[in-house]
Length: 464
Image (cartoon, rainbow, N blue to C red; front, side, top):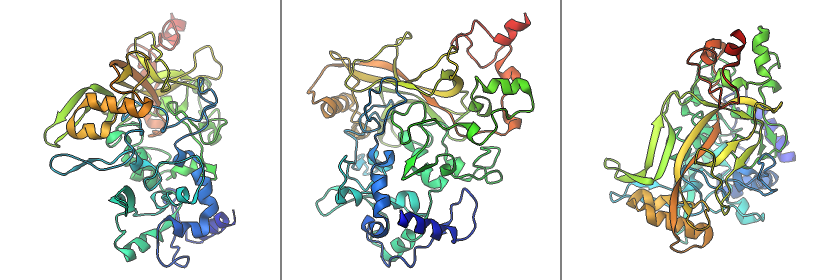
């Protein structure tokens, strides 16, 4: 703890700055040369140990908000998504096409480690695997190189330039928006492909784009909402398995009054309608987002000399709306798939209904896809997607994924349609761009009242 206090004190005297531009400590007097994470551990052993246990490093977390969590620790490492499916067979390594161009580098590209998989038991080796600079150093960049044993590892691109590396390593700050967006905006294979509401534009936007992060507005850093201690970060989206900080979820009312409007009719909505529903009319406003990913149909990209799933992109998307009480239902690996009434498998579904007092109507990105399941066990099969990008052999990629996940050799599989509800929380518009009454109520309104449990628009019914 004493090191954390010293660091905060140093940051405090580093000079004033905007909220979204965290103060920088030169660290000039603390070390001469940066020699990897061991340099940081000299002063920050305690902080490294706390980070080791966090969800950002373990990619696992407690699951009190999953109705079928069963007390398990779940996360990226042991669940499956409908984008690049699972890190299991896709952890690290350069995949190149016939031109020698790097097509993929593995899921560890967005892990805050240097290449080793996270382990549950703390060790010096695991602590030295933490990449402190990825979240704390302005101007830091890394790439894959081979270590002495010929294994791929993440290293700073300046690792052969000691003066340059020292300069970057001494520019330490609390995480800035651009640091968080390095991974959270680029996940899923392209800019804004995955989340839909986390665009690189948020790094330097105005308040019209986002009232919280706009430089001419509050200019807030991500960590001002996603608070926490000991590297445990608050905030869990509706489609995430684990959480770092069990307890009440992030709520606008923590900063805003529970009756924030001058109009009583609008304040009455707050009890059943999430603020995001009215204040985020659309998402993917700058970069198109992935709305459907069909792995059963490989798509060849001649100019890039690569393959991908067949991906449907969309821009300026109107959300889908559903009730959410803070809990979700996951389709776990190694369990028979649960087919919904519409014939799809719900990878992650928000829970809640009109009848629940604590549920509210939230906006979601409804992502659809097509994934393999074992014909006998009916288990979802992760895909070894990395080599597939180069050769387009989806059958081999599925079988390799099945071997990695279940030890199955040449198992029969078939394809199923899947869906995932992903909460929309960022890109909050100012009041002048919020939804108006007729956007939801009236002919052609955006809400599907039947899907929400109503017999029709409740306002129109009262007027008849």
